[in-house]
Image (spheres, rainbow, N blue to C red):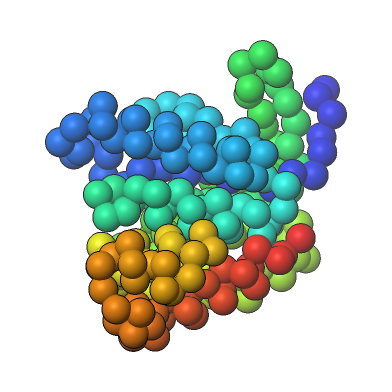
Length: 210
């Protein structure tokens, strides 16, 4: 039997990918986004079947950051959902990159939960869920934070998404104003009005999770 190890597992897929007008462009955008996060977090996310991808992350916090980074890389043209889980995982075929175990099953449960929540009007912004293979691990606080962040991001227009990307990358509001061709006060107002500062703070807190 393959040796089981504790892992942080992430499964993602592109929402409504079958209806994409240009599937080649979608695939190229997804590949570029995965390459970027793999470089930033030293992870191994890879496309598996169609527009689904999966891999492992060093911490739960890193997985939440990766989920947001991938979403922001593709919005507003495409959107994605993610299931994150903590649990045992075993390599079944190292050459083919095939893994199995409770962590993977929990991640599948998580992405299905995110999809189910999005079917309800009150939680339609749901894109990310977290599960643990350990029934004693408390997941409610992180689940609530992910749901709230998803909802806030879902409300952003294209310009606010651009500002959020910039703030998360460490650029100052003055720099962003110059890039957008607007005043620094306009950027500041957008950061406050669209809760961009709240999204950034939530992201920083979540990324600190082990």
